[in-house]
Image 1: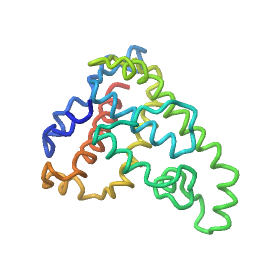
Image 2: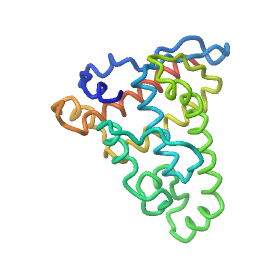
Image 3: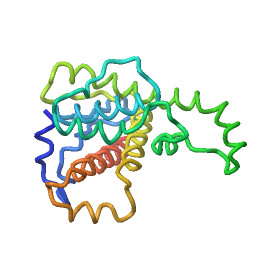
Image 4: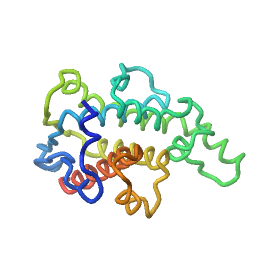
Length: 207
C-alpha cells in the first residue's frame, strides 16, 4: 500500500506526483477528483490522526498498519495526547489564543474552543466520509465527488498546518527538501506536505 509511495521521486519532481485529477467545477456541481489507492490511504490516515488529536473518537481507524510509512505519519502527528490543547503545538496552531493576555485568552477560549473544535472535526469527518468506501474496498483509483469544496479546502488547510508544525516547515524548507537524500525519513513526510499543497491549488482552480 503506502510503502510504494516512499519510493516516488522527490525534489522538483514532487510536482509530477498524481496530486489528484480534477474534473468539472464547484459552480456547475460536477466537481470530482481522481485519487490513487496510495493517495486515498495517505489522506484518510492524516484525517483520522488529526480527528483524534482534536478529540473526536467516534470512528474506526484505518492508520493502524504494519506499513512503515503509515507508522511514520502516525508518529509525527500523534506525538502527544489528543486533548492537551494548551501544550500541544499543533492544537495551539489550529486553536490559537485570541488575546496576548493569558487570562483574557483563557476566558475567551473557554467559550469558543469547543465550537471551533467541533467545526474542524465536521470538516475532517466530511472529507473522511468520502474516502471510506474506496479505502475499505481497496479500489486502485476512485473518482471522489466533491459536493462541498469549501469543506475540502478547510480540512486540507488544517492538515497542512498540522504537518507544518510537526515538520517545522519554514520559508526555506522546500530548498532543504530538494537537497535531502531519499533515505531521509523526513523527506517522504515533506513530500506529503507539498502534495497536499498541490491538491489545494488544483481545487482552487476548479471552484
